[in-house]
Length: 195
Image (cartoon, rainbow, N blue to C red; front, side, top):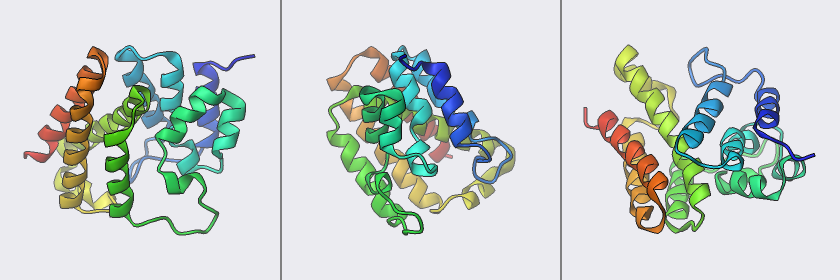
């Protein structure tokens, strides 16, 4: 029987059990359901929203991409794979991940050339929820929000600004829902970093 969005919610709730957003008491599932919600609100199909729910499961849990494909099928797994940092797809337990700047540079370059609107939408929805959270926390606790990240403010500003520009540059390739989603991400990014 083909899996649906409720199956994906249950799956990620189990896989991410005990995980919280950085330096908060918010269960990580909150971020994943926000990404799903963004994708659905912008009119993307259920399978894309399912990939939004699952986008961090390979990076942050013991679940591998083969299991995602076995449970949710090739289409969802391909979207999850496209939204996963490549070195994390096959990272062995205890193996060090690549440096932050190297990983983020790869993400930017990859998204500039990605041909799938759906992969770009999952990545954009993920980053949109992240930047919305940063914006909200800045309003609550101020600049100390930057202390919770692996890279300092100026690096985060570089990453989000270039990423937003890269995603917006792809608008000519896709339709109105992609344009609206990426415009929202760019506007929110600008609001955070032009303080």
